[in-house]
Length: 142
Ligand code: ZN
Image (cartoon, rainbow, N blue to C red; front, side, top):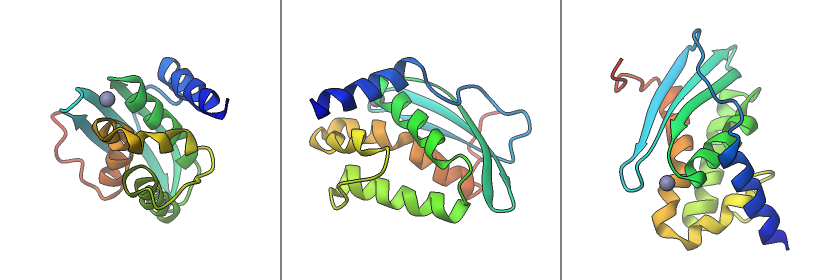
């Protein structure tokens, strides 16, 4: 029952990604690419006073990658940069290491750790977030 709900959340976000689009005034951006699955995202952020005041992304790929990125943008919007980076670590611990079981609003992705091939799909958006916040946008082809 619970699992079905989680699956529903992922499918819903995969079909209708939140915060999709781009930000003309982005202060930070980064591209993410997962060659294993072919997922691509481009992340745009506006950071003011160490806070993520706006975030959007454009992307294509599997439902897990798009849903995870969508959930990530919903979660970190309005967050302090330092808190978003701490959340990256927790999310990573949940889906990669399995050392964290609950993460408010993101537990629906915990099951991904049972499917190693999909872990990179689930972490793609988060890696792009960390790169963008670290100012590693130079890889952009624009
Ligand atoms: Zn994927």
